[in-house]
Image 1: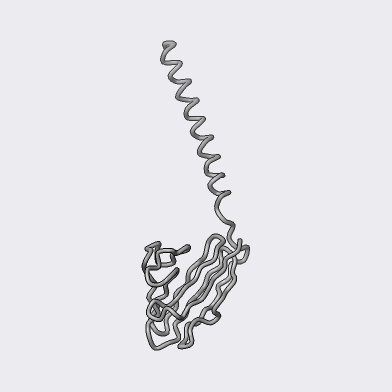
Image 2 (image 1 turned 60 degrees about the vertical axis):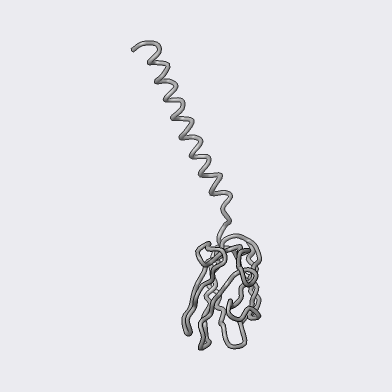
Length: 138
């Protein structure tokens, strides 16, 4: 083996070792930045009736879920953020499609898990006066 090929092998080994170390640490850092989900995640029920959401304000923990149930005869167009654009959504339960909403038919339910602390509001896109607030703590 020549001295030059030996140097290349040593360099390759050092680069490989550095890459393995970097990615093992990077994974730990990324995991540390993730919010801790609730120790015992809960599912909270929100009923949507002709009088609106019940309850109108809910405090939950990161990792908890909300199940919205439509108890009206009409469809519920559940939207996050301000009406009518819904572009200021924090959690985007509609698949991160800002400006969209979740369609919940009469008698049906929809469940969404909240990750990360924050506060947001939801409303019925068809009846924007029907709204509620969710506060998520770590």
